Length: 169
Image 1 (cartoon, rainbow, N blue to C red):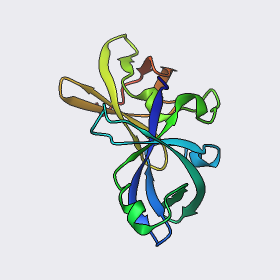
Image 2: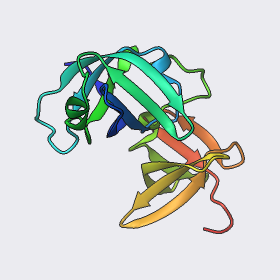
Image 3: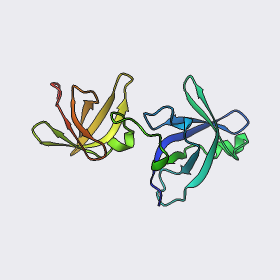
Image 4: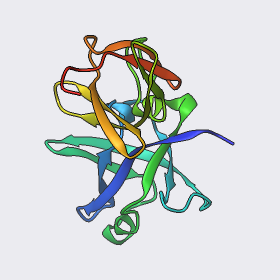
């Protein structure tokens, strides 16, 4: 089975010709510049079949992205896609540099402080504009760690992170 990751959620239909608005779930904002083959999936139904789709066109707007999916040519067809996740096969994702990451590579990582004490797992990554922030949860408690060199000592994508605990924690 092909490993896929969700990169966007389809929002409302846009216009009469099958365009849809999408909200990105990734920090790589130009992901659709190189990806044409995607999979449409319902997030809540893990056993529901995914549908392969091909992107015809991508337009950037002031507030996000508009996508045109091959075969979706009317407002009514586009409305039926609302809420679906757009997923991409991991091996089709654009290659990033060593210091860059996809959000999915950080989720569920174990996080430790400098002394080796386990602080929890990454449950979310928040984009703040200036830098991303790791949300680390343990026993119902959340801690936030800025993803900047001052606080991230070691980061092994998909495995673990060692962080300096900010003074305010």
